[in-house]
Length: 639
Image (cartoon, rainbow, N blue to C red; front, top):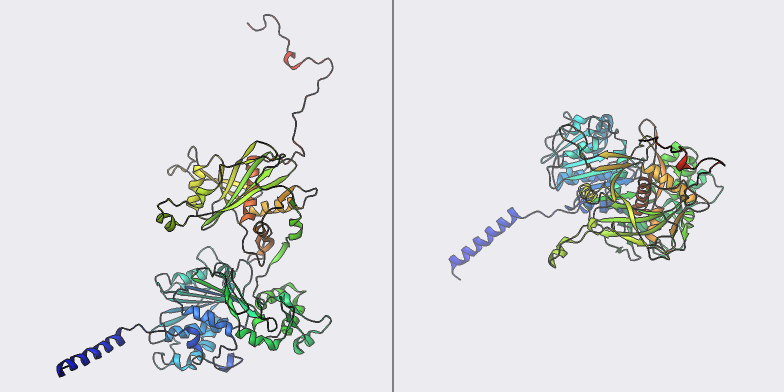
């Protein structure tokens, strides 16, 4: 190789190195790895000041890594108090400043709290952490304009009571702290959380972070957590090594001990749900270090491996109670529970702040054993001979539909006849084989007839009620195509002033506003009233509500999934409603039972008769002329 060629190759290599350095996409560290050692906790607001060590709170690692994961857009933390959820927000702010800058909005419940947190917690933490302090623009924080000014981004504090502070400018990041303490929707503006999140919609790489202790079932954090992948922290038993989610029902303590003894003498313990061994407070740090988050529908085996297929979701939700706190003992929790159990306001604080569960005023509890006693020995798929007609209910979901048929007789009697689930076709797979994909609406058995038991007769379904809340356009098309046997219904969140259902006309003349002839109607149902009726019928003796003993475990799971509770608005006004019971996730077939019952009312259910009625014969008095001759015909009377 000549000297000129060698020089040319050297120049080329140097130029290539320069280009690679200039145009190379920087590899960002994961948020949890970045935070350890770089975030310095300050002594005034921290129990353990100094460089952050996640070995004490290992449950923070996965939520932090979700913030640096480009596939995750929303993060919701439904956690108890003093578990590090606000620190999580501060750490992710620092990560954004150093690793992935973009304008941010930090929202607190009120102005005074927002300014106090900015002055006493955020600024000291950022000033004490060199990796964040190096990005400070100028010689001091720009407090005069109430913002944090960095070299590549701003962080603006805002408060939920000021719509103007929430709707001022676009931003890539939104941190919503203690969202359940935000004011309720007033009707003049959107709710504060929605206003703040609207600021991010122009950014493809936006992040929305919500952290809060829960309040009620209707609270913001619980609503968002229910729509996430719902992760829970599984920890192993130190004795049998089986993984489990820590629950309050497994905390035990000796009877008769004083509250101080329970709190300071470590008398309470956690009982493993598998081997029933006693787990002490000293076992908790090792359990936490070996813990693992698992989304809804998944579990963790003895080796710490995830079992099941995680749902595909851009919304990561995390639930954590004070049972996992490295600073709170089981005895402290037992003492707090005993101190507050007889006072509803204190008990609500324990449920919300310590257990991170929603507060529920229960009106009716579902007794699963009593419901299972309704099982009767008759085959599914056949109509009992005492039945007068059939109705059906259809509950539509994102990619499937549940259907159910019930037979109705006299004396309020009814029998479960059949049920099932139909799914949308995989369009890509069907296209590969040259077919036409069908939706779940195409597969519903609305024109089916069911054989009558011990007979050659068959009985069709006379009326279906179809849920129109999801996939509304498709439901309307289905209703129009089958208007002779199907009605589209919507559950009403409020009472219908005594009516069980109300029809609303969809097709109207645009100019006059009057209904068009042959119009299409949608029916609103008072679902609370119908569920009350079904619960009454399930308790009537002698039995009138029958379920086949061959019904699947899925059916029993669905029809016992809800409980009646009281929700109160900001003024304390109570509203009865049905919500999912803890540990239950699906209620679709229960909704189908409600819709089939509504269809029976619309069709005309002869529940007022104890037996099949006979046409009564009119008694005739002695000497009374027959009906045909009660006006004697006279000759020439009609000419």
